[in-house]
Amino acid sequence: MRCNFAQKFSTLKTKSHKKDKINVITLGCSKNLVDSEVLITQLKGNGLDAVHESTKNDANIIVINTCGFIDKAKQESIDTILRFADAKEGGKIDKLYVTGCLSHRYKDDLEKEIPQVDAFFGTMELPLLLKKFNADYKHELIGERVTTTAKHYAYLKIAEGCDRPCSFCAIPLMRGGHVSKPIDQVVTEAKNLVKNGTKELVLIAQDLTYYGLDLYKQRNLSELLKHLSDVEGLDWIRLQYAYPSGFPMDILDVMAERPNICNYLDMPLQHGSTKMLKVMRRGITREKTEELIHNIRAKVPNIAIRTTLIAGHPQETEADFGDMVDFVQKMRFERLGVFTYSHEENTHSYSLVDDVPEDVKEERAAAVMEIQEGISAALNQEKIGKTLKVLIDRKESGYWVGRTEFDSPEVDNEVLINAEKFYCRRGDFVQAHITDASEFDLYADIV
Image (cartoon, rainbow, N blue to C red; front, side, top):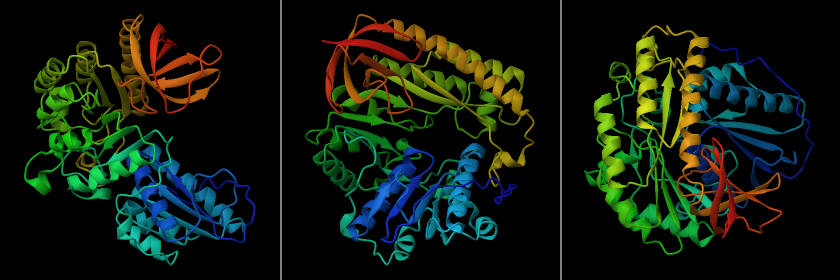
């Protein structure tokens, strides 16, 4: 990687502590968060004192679970490693271990450039990491998990890796090919989470819609959803990270018939130009994408579709960007985010010239988000006067902050309820009457 790993050292104030305490730091996506939760579960199962992102500065051992997805995420991971490497050099911590995607992808470079780290581990090397603590990988803990999110919701990883050939994506380099978890194992984990207070499960994978092909020789997400939907006490099931090409339409039938499956679908579409979709190796055209979106909305009329797009991929012209803008305006997605293209080593796109200047990438991303802001504002205005089921996440700045079934944690719209007028509890469901709306927030009174 063309980056000087030995830059940007900073000082970290911590206290020395004689008793071993392990602080796990998570960077990147929800899939990384689940990996950290599994690690903490295994450490605790071995009788060790392990916490997640403690701010007390009383841990003498640090484990950093890194992200290596795009440049900004990689830099954040590097800066975090360097910060704790400096702390170790100053005698403020005893041991520093690094795991996750960045470590998997750039292990050799990192070992040379940051010798203060005691060991680097790849994404599939949890047993080796545990050995550094004289801990065993306990198979009896499979399906058990200490969660680090608010108690009432949790992420549930149903598969690992990806078999898709997307030109820009380095995930297969870090996570390997697609491997589904068996249905019974996923259901067991779901039951354990619900037993511990989870009300909402967010299903995640690199590609949800590929689920089951390796184990059952067919796309089997719909069957998994039926089993999960039958778990007593599970109020919401949410789908994140679907893939449009080969989308299994039968999951929509299950969504429509099962009230505890949220009318929500996260489906990264990446672009609105057929030419660019071909360059990106997405296996679908704009026309087929639009047809799919129309069919999804016809089957589940009340669905909220979240998507993400990439601005500035190699060979993206002004005309291609115009197609993206037109696509966004035409499809009117309920939720949308934009990434600027990141030139990633060992991907197919890396063989292309990164010919869109960074400032143009940023301008294009901002232009799309400005359009989406207007779409979101209009769609939110339509909700004024309606009463919606809302799950309360937290109290903040004088408001109870919650979400509808159309919103995933941390990335989507929120519902704000005046805490001086109404009393709620975190993790409660309430009926909220929408009284006002802005671009990305709804304001409500409790019915």
